[in-house]
Image (tube, rainbow, N blue to C red; front, side, top):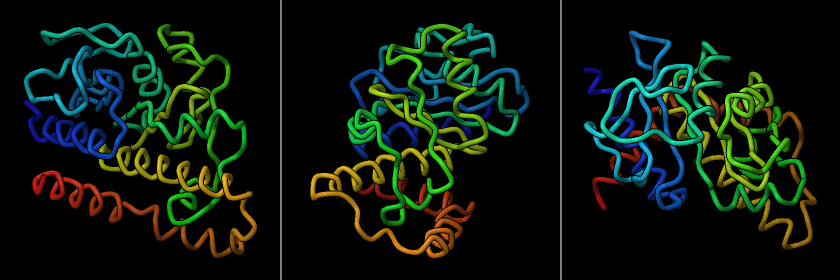
Length: 230
């Protein structure tokens, strides 16, 4: 059932790993079950992102409890359950320990609109700083969801990233774009800081171009083709 959805999750895991966002068996992806909005498919614990298969995904309820699947669930399931509970518009959530994003979050500085990737987050990037511990309780998951608000991406300070979107294609697009934006700002900071970010109207125009459904789908399709090329 829902093999097309699960196949995109398999591809998404491999894309994240290939992009350098894998952290051994840590990091997770979830997608709301299409005909059961109070449930979601999720990567199981103790496997890598690139090891997701159609058969080892688990099904979880919005209370964070596993409903189906042979493998265990991640302790940080509450990132997914609470965001999906708070955001009916969200169907996919990604959490990784993207290294540039984690490093950037330790600076305590706002993300700037550097390059195409940075412009995507020019309308604001929330930072969850209540704790740098794992999100292993309903209360912490609820706090993460509250900090995320209506945004599509956020930083967990000294921890990682969370992206939330209507589709897995968009959630992956945001995850990869956020890591690139953080990487570029770290480079700029190392060189003395940004001196020429461009006009605000140019940044807005660039964001409109970059933040489109067509872009999400085309980018995901390209990344899948790249996977197949090895």
